Image 1 (cartoon, rainbow, N blue to C red):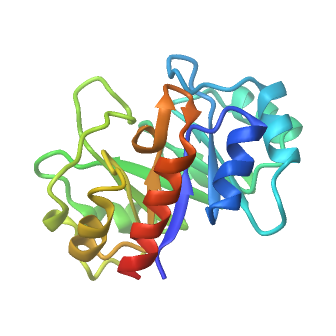
Image 2: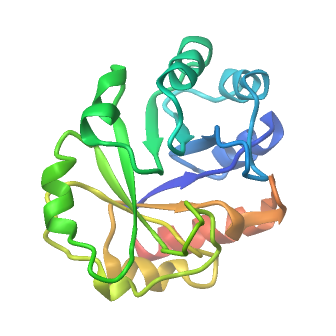
Length: 205
């Protein structure tokens, strides 16, 4: 069964909405330029209202070590998601499982990168857009996702209720990651969109 992460959670209300709908994980964005950025205080509130067995994921983009360590010291984070140019050595140095996000630009060698980031628990494949580390709201060609990578693939980039079933059918990922595709406004989620997204994922299997 395809796992589901809902990213860009900013409130306890939205976290409960996601979890009640069946999300396996929620994402907290610690990247100040993002409209979905959360403070440590907001993140603590969100994580403290999560039910058992829901994974909390902290997203960073080229953050300094001290910033990441400060978040990990204050917030009960299960997995780190690195969205910048972080090295595998850096990603693996925080005593937490991690996911490495890769933007699907032309010529990207996923086989080489899975070897480079062999310590990652998953590779998150997102849409490439120059100067934008993620959250583009745009899809990429899902046929470019190999089916024989040895590290679990998390599919992101422009997923919405209307296209997620097709995305899963083509890319066959371990999990899907959605943020803007289930929002009412930037940083706030829409209950009906989440329900529809979840239903279409489950229908695909």
